[in-house]
Image 1 (cartoon, rainbow, N blue to C red):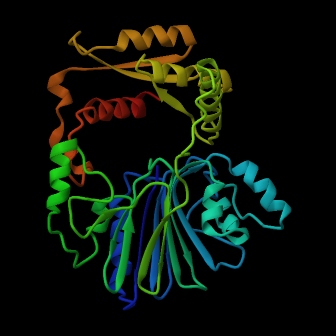
Image 2 (cartoon, helix red, strand yellow; image 1 turned 30 degrees about the horizontal axis):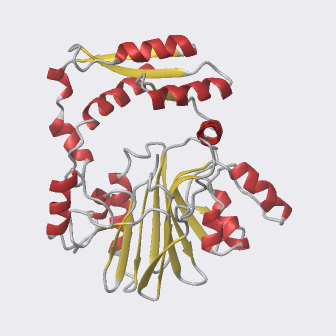
Image 3 (tube, rainbow, N blue to C red; image 1 turned 90 degrees about the horizontal axis):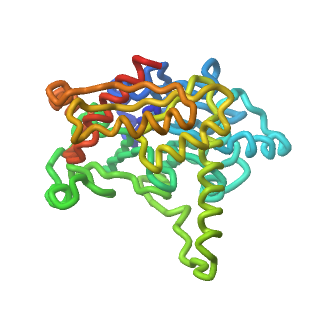
Length: 355
């Protein structure tokens, strides 16, 4: 994952530049491999990079041929190679091998909505159009990548995490009582709310245009409304298996080593099965186990790993060590009640160490 942040300020406040640098520094845990900035008189973009594709030359922001478009992306476009073939035929020139650069050239050939509809992946992105003085935000269909924004009278701010927005001066940090009630009901705060009244979650499957002080959000994709109920269960299962296999195959494009979390349950086991089918190297799987057998499911993961032939790692954790709430609380910018983040954090730490 990467981190993105940016602003538009009609007052052309120079203090926003330093605030943006602090915002990107606050996102460095998302992107430890580098940072980059773009500044115009009224706008700024910042990027903290985790290098996965085009490690050497894929630094962001990225630009189109004449430099009038500047782009930052947190995420990945899985079908970029297919899209690039068509863009090259249309005469576009690529400066990098990055999947992110694809979107810039798509926007030169199509409207924003059409360009987004052609992408297959997970993303939160920001595109600044210098000629039109227009800022565009967009988020993937499922909302996998986070994106927050603030719209005030004379400025607009956005970032991957709330903590990055807090580096900008003058924000109204009044607690949103509606969001608090939703948290108590669901255990998390759903979009478009955040714990603060002035900060909003950008909706999934949508794009937003900030221009002339106005911010308009529109969906670019919706779930199909019609379902063919005449199809048999076997047909649905066949299509589901094919879609899952294709989704896993597309996600194996990487210039760095890949691994996968394996719990031994149905979903992770199926993903590892398809990953083994397409991977060129032996797949590495990672699992967490507990000393208390009531909670320990690592034996199921080990069975699946042996059956699928993966290089398997197990990290064992006891309950005295797993409760790292003071340390973990810094990663959450608002109330969140899903206790699964505790073992997940330890599993991520183990994966980083054992890989």
